[in-house]
Structures are given as structure tokens and as C-alpha cells.
Image (cartoon, rainbow, N blue to C red; front, side):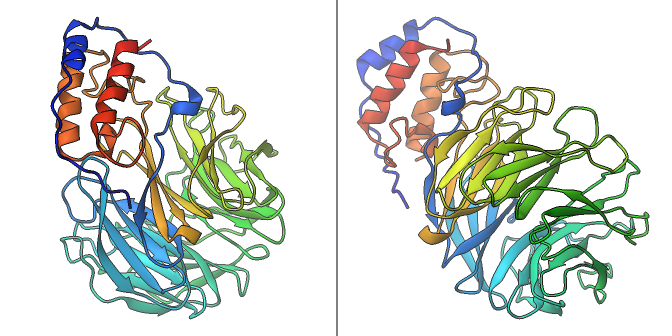
Length: 433
């Protein structure tokens, strides 16, 4: 993990003069190739494969929980409030954990964790003690070979239920919450061949969460509509791409309905528009990197439209596809990350108003955090977020530098030095075009 040195050097007089004399300038849209700063890597464990974000310790910041497939653990990383992370917890789960979900499972106001253990045929539930630490895991039997877990209140009783996808018997399992963070035995629903990472959302507009699951070996996505009581209707299958792996839901075309974005190991991401009734139109494929593992939906360039971020396992990069505003997407822009990126979490980690990314780099045993520098005001030197470049941004830079924030690492070398002052001065002199 890069070490951020925080000894504050003397302020260059030229920089102070430049800041005081700079004209106020309104910001314009940022360059698609410059949305994210270079990633900062944090130690995660042995083979991190899945990641979630939530305020684990109740301090208002987005923390991280990561599943490590090769040492059978969950690791938690605390956010210091400015987008830097410290590893604070390590918890043993079952054998070969593959997926993690986060939700308040016991109704105490703190986010808990659920983890699928592929080799054990179990699911581990870890309840939050209220301070970001977790009790020992409780295991539930899952048949068979659970690949992923997702969370939502399926039966409308106010308690969060769990859904797993099971490769060993080609099913989706629903585990209803008893109301105290324990769960009833699983109920199986037949899916396609080798169901992978499920996504949950209201697909047919009736107010109930439905389920969509990509089926790896049948090149389809299964859609299960909820009857409102937590019972799923018979599945409907739609064409995805070749070897679909993961998916996310979001209103991509601004018509008020949840659309599907699916990664396919053929090097594409498929977008399936929802006409509003929970059925789906013919897929539209977009080229991404090699062996894409996961896709996240968020407004990455602060234009109000949800974009796509895709983790490409075999090309060690991240594809960013910007939404044109109507649910179609531009050609990908690639950002380098670590080795074998697998899973993406999205949150405003540094509380500057834009969507940052955290990504598991499995072969590096690390999580990479990419802070967004596009922002609502789309100007890197607008550090106080008022839409203008003024002397107050200079003072905010000093505060961030003194706090050791990676936001102040303007030269991107992983350390805070005099060269960051020089790079800040160059950016400030250029202003917000």
C-alpha cells in the first residue's frame, strides 16, 4: 500500500500568488480519459474476489468488506473519511467463499454480511456488533455449490431476505428472514445452466423486488417476478451473450424502468432494455476488455445519466462506457488497475459528490480504490466543490495535504511531496476550462 507522507513543506510563494490572483472560472465536462485518478492499492487478503460497501462503523463513511477465496476470510477496511482505507478486521468463513452481500439483517440499524461458501455448500452470516466488528459467523446449508448471494425484502415484512445462486443444481434459493437475522430453510427455484451473480430490483413496476440471474452455460438470463409475498413466478429466459457471468440493474434509458447490464466472457457487456413490464428487449452488445467479470452502474461523469464500469479479469483493466443519455453507450475508455480485477463497489468514498470505485484485484491480493476527479463541478482543482476555481481551493488543498489524503496526490506517485504542490499549481494556473 502506498505510504502517504504528510510532512507539510513550505508553501511555494509562486503558488500562493497564483492562487490569490487566479480568476474565477466555471467548470466544464471532464475528459473521459481523466475521470479517475490512478488507483491506490490496499492489502485485502489472499485472493479477493467480491466486495461490498457500507457504513460498517456508523461514522457516515463508506467502508469496505472483501471476500478472500484462498484463505477463507472476510476482511474489512475502514474509510478514514477522505477516501483512504485501513484494514481493521479479519473473519473466518467457510471454504472457498465466492460472494458477499451487505444489509441490515437483524434490524438493529447496522449493516451485516452474508457470504456464500462454494466448496462447503453453506452460507455464512456475520452480524455487526454495532461498531464495525462482527460476531462469529453462523452457517446455513445451501444446495449446491452456491456462487453468489444477494439481499432484499422479498416478502414485504420489513426484514431483509437472502437469495443465492447455486451452480451445482442450477437453482436460485430464497431464504426468508425470521425477523432476527436468522433464516428459514432455503426454497429452490429452477434456473438455467450454471446460474451466476444475481441482481435484485423491481423489474415489472409493481413495487416488489424481482430477481434476474445470468446462466453461464446456456447464454441466457433468467427473470423471476415476485408475487409480493416472496414467492417467485416461473422463470422467463432472455438471450444474454456468450458465457454471461455477472449483472447489474439500473434505469439506463431514463424511462423509469430497471434495465439489465450483463457481462459476458466473450468480451462484451449486454444491455437489455426493459419496456416496463418486466420483459426485456433484444440485447445490445458493447465491446469491453478480456474476460469481463463484473459490471457496476453509476453516474461516473456527473452528467445525470448512469454509466457502466466493467472489471476485465484477463486484460487487467477497467472499461468505462459513458451513457449518451438515452441508454446507448460510447466506446469504452480503459483504465489500468491491478491483476485479475473481479468485483466492483461504488460509493462517494471521499465525500466530494461523485462516484468513486473500489475493485478487487485477485492476483495482487489487494483492493484498488479509484477516486473520481470528474465531480459534480468537473474540475480537478475545484476542491471545495463550489463550481469555481478560487483561492479557497488552494487552502482546501493544504488541508487535504496535511491530512494525508490521496486526493492531494496530484502527481499520482502514491506519496505526498513538494511535487504535488507543483502539479497543483500547474492545474490551478490552467483553471477550469
